[in-house]
Amino acid sequence: MQNQIQIPTTEPERQYYFIGEAKKLLEKEEKEAGRKLTFHVTTFGCQMNARDSEKLRGILEDVGYEKSDSEDADLVVYNTCTVRENADNRVFGRLGILHGYKDKNPHMRIAICGCMIQEKNVVDKIRKSYPFVDIMFGTHNIHELAELLTENMKTGKTTVHVLEKGAEPVENLPIDRTYRFKTGINISFGCNNFCSYCIVPYVRGREKSRDPKAILTEVEGMVKDGVKEVMLLGQNVNSYGKELNPTVSFAELLHEVDQVPGIERIRFMTSHPKDLSQELIDTIAASKHVCHHIHLPLQSGSTRILKDMNRHYTKESYLDLVRRIREAIPDVALSTDIIVGYPGETEEDFEETMDVVRKVRYDSAFTFEYSKRSGTPAASRPDQVPADVVKDRFSRLLAEVQRYGRERAQALEGRTGKVLVESVNRENPALVTGRLENNSVVHFPGSPDLIGQIVNVKLSECHGFYYIGEMQE
Ligand code: SAH
Ligand code: SF4
Ligand code: F3S
Image (cartoon, rainbow, N blue to C red; front, side, top):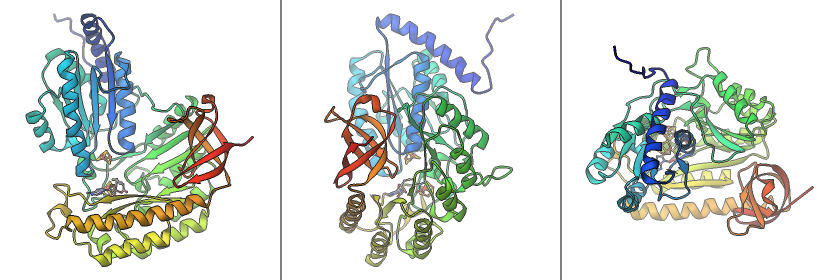
């Protein structure tokens, strides 16, 4: 009779089993090395990845690795983004540096995960041109890190596991939050919108909402653990819960989270304009803790381009939405994402975008040059906009959004606002740094024990995109 321990087949039990296995193997390796082994997780991309990295770090800490601030560590994990080509290039560039570290450290392992790894050509390229990478896994199985690490520790061979689509999200694995007092929380995974330029639906899979009870339980647990601010995360939070049975609207979920005792600030990201309901606007207006800040990606101000992008709104309906939001929430801060140089974009289309920017007067805007992502419908269009035209439009747009950003920030100078203190100021240790409800950064004289607290700060001087303030009693 064989006396073999059964490997659990259900999650998260299976991963806790492999955390135990990896721990034993790590202890053995540490004995050989005569020192503790360290890890570092580097995050590229969006808030989803930032949250995933908290999960990766939680697993590695449970395995017994020590956290390091440097990439010159014994296990380096790159959690990657592929939304634009320069995101990919950054990763490939930095892999060269990691190779240098690995040459000098026989205990070093390199793992790459996240959105880039969902693309087959990337995995092939890494296998061929960066064979020193030890472990690769995708967006649907980040919970398997300990299992893949165990396999790699046992075999010493490149370990690759990528799933085409996600099963049920695995809950209740360890988590190491970047900040004690704020964090993201997934409310949905994936995206169903297939905007014609965007690779996210291909690398993150179909939209799947989490059970609202699981979300609320998680928020309650976080609050007990010291969290004051949560950011509800989904590629399109506004379509949350549509496929659940019974259905739950995002507004209903937000209302429930607002009632969690002890929660102080709630943010959410991202809101697709096509699904932003009046119910949601009214819920935010009536809420106690939802920040008066909405990130509302415009992408383009030209109805013709929006149609081609598959965004399902027009210039007019977007402006009407902004009007209704401002009517219900007069002090709301609005931010946006804009793409310049989408295939077929004419000067007239671009002027429509500039017109929306002038009308909305965003508090802040992320502006991007269109980047061709292979496999997306827009990539195969013959009418790509020449690079010099894109560059010219990009700088005109940037100047415009910065002008309004400064103007909006300036308008708050002299007022007092609530700041969640995040850290000691990097350049001047006599200052601490935190964020207003509208997400603006404020630096003010204060001691490190204020970190994690929400305090009243007078916004004495506006310096363009940040303030120097004074704490009030
Ligand atoms: N789900 C979010 C956005 C996720 S990607 C939403 O719908 O708003 C973040 C931003 O990257 C997008 O809003 C878009 O402005 C930009 N982006 C996505 N694909 C891009 C591409 N191919 N080229 C340039 N920018 C892109
Ligand atoms: Fe991409 Fe559009 Fe989905 Fe946002 S909503 S992730 S831009 S496809
Ligand atoms: Fe990038 Fe993936 Fe987020 S492609 S923007 S990290 S979902």
